[in-house]
Image 1: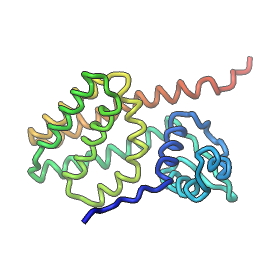
Image 2: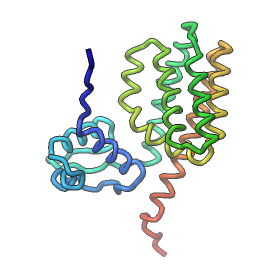
Image 3: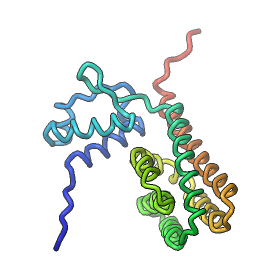
Image 4: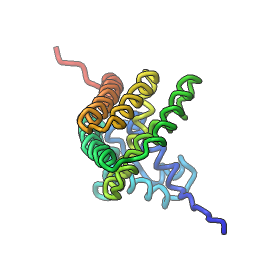
Amino acid sequence: MTTFVRISLADPVTDALRRQIITGEIVSGSPLAEDALAEAFDVSRGPIRDALKTLRDEGLVEQQRGRWRSKPFSTAEVDELYGLRGALEGYALRRAMLGNPDWSELDVIVEKMAAAQERSDQATMVAADFEFHNAIYQLSNSWRLTEAWQRYAPTFEVLLHLTNSPDPHSAVADHRRILALARAGDPEPAIAELLAHHERGAVIVRRYISEQSAPNELPEAK
């Protein structure tokens, strides 16, 4: 029996708006009118409303008096998101390591990343990077951890495009180190390396956001 998976019309709209808000293409605080967005994406208002509700749950938009606006995506937001990710993923890695896991899937993913890096295939590189971190949650055997991560995973998928671009060689090396330390069996060094990897990504994102917001800053009064 063939199983058909229904793809929601809101998904491409959600993905596009998420990327535009995070990268600053949609300026912080911009109004997001449902009718204008429906016309821009050539869909009805239903998928637009669904997309905006999803982005509200992710903390990227807000609704006040029935009107939607994009929320600021600042360095403070980055700090909070990466702090949350570190807490979740560090715990997921610890749980995975205590469960005598099979790391072979992550070996395959790292090699996929390395091959993509060699041929400068950014899309495959990011997809494999994302797959690596998803696998840690799966190996933790905790549906609660996995569910908590899935709420913010789409945001981090956008951020991965920013953090992998400057130095893909470093990204591959980071994942090799994390995997080697996880396989060695001592959670503390493995988690420390994972958190250091997160922080290197956060530094790149903070720099990007600062550069994007700089032209919009008012000059200092003389």
